[in-house]
Length: 236
Image (cartoon, rainbow, N blue to C red; front, side):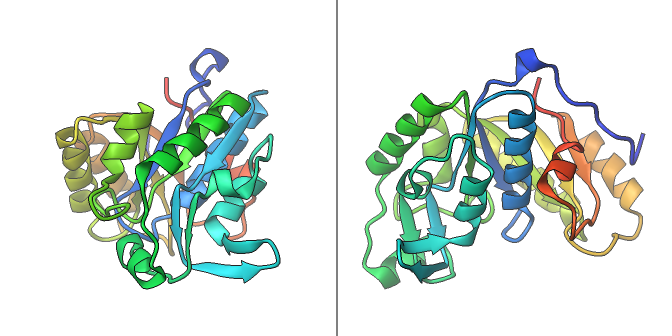
């Protein structure tokens, strides 16, 4: 039923690593990633967030920091070193390939893989947040699909509930399948004031996406991460 709450998954289905991607930038990937971390931790699991490449950082006494990566770190238990959560912190708030060029940084896969393996030794689940939409490259010659396949991650798609969401969600799902990656679920995220015919759009997305909806988050700008986690189900 549209608007119905999705019950949490059973504990036997929880200890898995997830890659959170989106239909575009600004769709709430960090919000959903943090909520998944809280959902995992609420069930007694050690869970750590990771943002392998982040653009748009500010300087602190500890070095360059990204707000999304800090939110993931704050939601993690245990809390590892920042450099493991965000191996590549790029200063300019733009596409990672452009931000890396501006910073004179070469983003490479081996340091990301090493950081992920270190996180994996510390926790039962790692939630990895991607950049922008699915086809936004991580770096020159490195697609997000390369990282997902290297980590053998399950994918969750965050769909921003706004005009165009049907097209964006279906295109992204097809691209993920074409990249030979596993899409295991999607989350409907209300990123702005309610969409006209929101229930109808939600039903249409359920019909056109071949994987289950793991949660429907309304526009809740002041909701806490645990509150949002209660609206999510973990993949079966």
